[in-house]
Length: 134
Image (cartoon, rainbow, N blue to C red; front, top):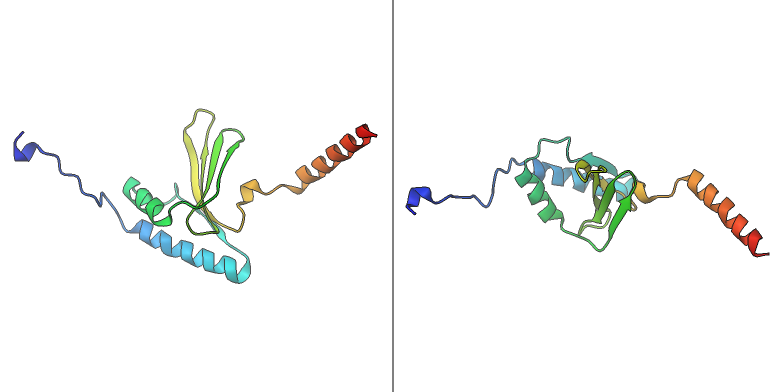
């Protein structure tokens, strides 16, 4: 193989700098979460990020201790990053294709919080079970 035939792959890939800016936005949201209790959501797929940007951002955020999988109209993956309060969330459709991807800054991701209607239904169900035990 001659030198011109050897492929050259840059370790940097095609980074645009947009992921670096997004990291700053995440910092602002995390600060807001601590000061006011309000975090926020960033739609990864709605931003002009290259795959290299996305991988760079994943590497910067790292992985935390919590990983949650949900099966609701497709599979969802909720990964705490190395920074508590920053969550990387992916939703896949019934065919396994990535449907949405975002970062949520919150103490607990909204997706896993019980809805009051569900809690009420659970209470009714528990009361029925207790009554059946009598």
